[in-house]
Image 1: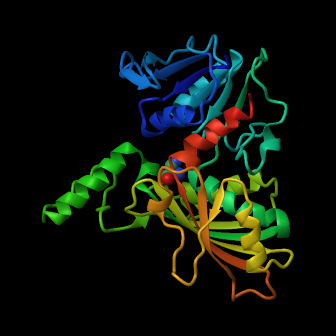
Image 2: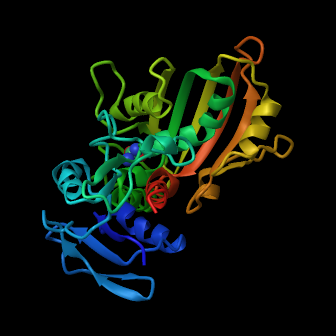
Image 3: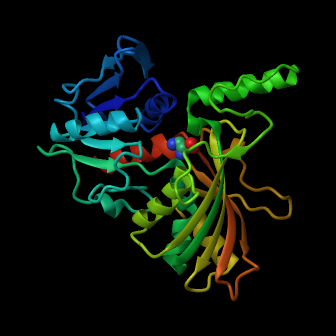
Length: 339
Ligand code: 2RA
């Protein structure tokens, strides 16, 4: 029993993780359709105790689909998302195609589930729901509980983003380069034009007119939409670092009301989907390897911002798995809200 589901872009790193998350969470479904490009059609993929065959994505793929999970890039989402919705499917899109479109909810289930109120499966008319960018999700999982308590007026984020955000090929290249460098060979640089192993560099997203790259402006714009607050001041610097699949982010917050670090820590300890790792005596704080392949976002280094007056500022450090909570888990949790 349950809805009929389609996973679009199933052969990519995120697509594969969609299947693991659906299985891990025992998501109920009556049918599961795996869709990808013509090139991948016919491939067999094992799922739970069965072998499924990948089907070619066409305009007719969504006739009997209740929920379509998209993660095949913005152009595929733009082309097929509306078609799927017109056929009655609720589309949960992991690309940036519709995130800033008025009327398309941009949802983190623990943060703003009300944004998708009224959307349900089984209607004649489907809907589009956008999954936020991974670095936005991970940041706001920790910042929102504090925002709800003391109202964030300004947020400054510095991200340290994993290879998985650039896809499976980037993860393979990081591993290959690391071996090459250790063996004294010149590094293979196909994905990024510079050496990635033992290095870090400004995020590979295009740089815009204002000098910010697209990743940084996603953080700015998506935060305002998710918090429904066009006045909150946000700035970000996004960096690609040689880590496989979990993002790390330094977050500085300025509040309208005072918020001391002990209260902040207590709030975060009960925040859904968040675990506090903040052991100052043994210098143990969140780290990418510790959150990789896990659902929770870890937060630590919670401390009063000494550059701000009277408990109106906090610093913290957040880590989260880019492929799970940053993409697939968040999308599946959105789908769970439709059940
Ligand atoms: C990145 N946020 O990490 C992107 C992936 N969607 O590059």
